Length: 304
Image (tube, rainbow, N blue to C red; front, side, top):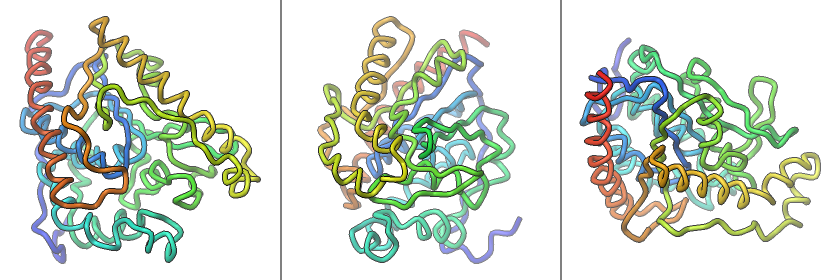
C-alpha cells in the first residue's frame, strides 16, 4: 500500500499490547461531534495498548472507532484540528447543497482518501467483534453489520450516521437505512444479548441527562409517509434511550459495567464545530479514559 498524495503524513497503526478477553465489551453511544469525547477515550486506551475483543457502536461512534481499532493514535484529533471547522464538514449549507447536515462525501470519502489515511491493513488484522448498527427503515429495527462489512467506501458507517430529517436514507445491502442511534442509542442490550458479562460504556452526555420526546410528529409524517416504522421509532427514541441508559447505570451499581462520560458541563451540541471547544472535549475524554484504562489493565493482568 502506498501513502503518496495525502495532505497529512500517514499515521501507521500500531497493534495493541492486550486484547481484552471475551466477555468484556465496549458499548458506544453516538452524539455527532460530541463523539470526539469518545475519540479522546480511545486515545487513552491506545496509550495503554488496550483493545476490546467486542465493540458495538452506532452513529458517530461507528466512525470514531475505526482509527481506534486500527491503532492510529492521534488521527481523530487531526480531524478536529484541521477539518471539523471547515464549512464542508457540518452546517446548514450542506443541508441545502447535499441534503445532509454532515457532508458525507467530504467526511467519509475525501478526508480518508486524500487527507488523513485510515490504516485498513491494521484494521483488518484485528481479530475482534466490531458491530455497527443502522436502522432498517422498513422494520424500524436495528440491523447489525459485522467488522468485515466495513470497507474503505464506508457505506455501513455512513448508514449508521445518517441522522433522520438531516440526512438522506442510505440504500445498502438491500436495506433502506438511517441512524442506528434511533433504535439502539446506547447498544447495551445488544452487548448483553451477545453474552458479554462486563460492559465499558462510553456516553457523550453528562450524568443526569434524560432524553425528551421528539416534538414534531407532523414533520415525521410528512417526510417519512412511506416508512411508518421510522415515524414510530423516532417517536419512541426517547424511551429507548432512557431505558438503555438506566440499564447501564443499574449494571454499574451491580459491578457489571463501568460508565465513562463527560464530567465537565458540555459546551457543544451534536453539530458543534468550534475547534477549541472540541479539542477541550477530546482532551477531557482522554483524561477520563486514563483512569478506566488503568482499571482495564488490572483486569488484563488479573485474567492473564
